[in-house]
Length: 146
Image (cartoon, rainbow, N blue to C red):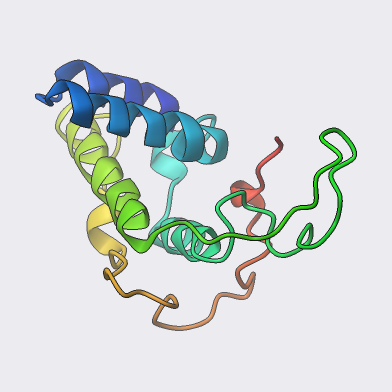
């Protein structure tokens, strides 16, 4: 059972108006599935979620600062890191939480790690708590291949 499956199931049962559905589906398509889609649902950790949110707070394209100021060979455009809006990062957290709640009730996961992870505040700047041995750059499960 993958995170992608749980997120699709959430969209199938969520009672959202059209605008909220489109916004939720866009966040899932643009941020959650590329990063966590192939991950087994039970393998997601609170640390991974908090680091993911911290990285989006640095660059919404997950470049981790490596592409900042460099020209993309495909588009020939210079990349400038732009952080994702704190409110959008909070929405990501609050999309994962009900998806994992459904997974918990349906027996796909044993813990809802989104309830363990600290949600970013609206004026959020950094992940609080102990530093990971991976830092913000290198947790293997968070590597995105665009």
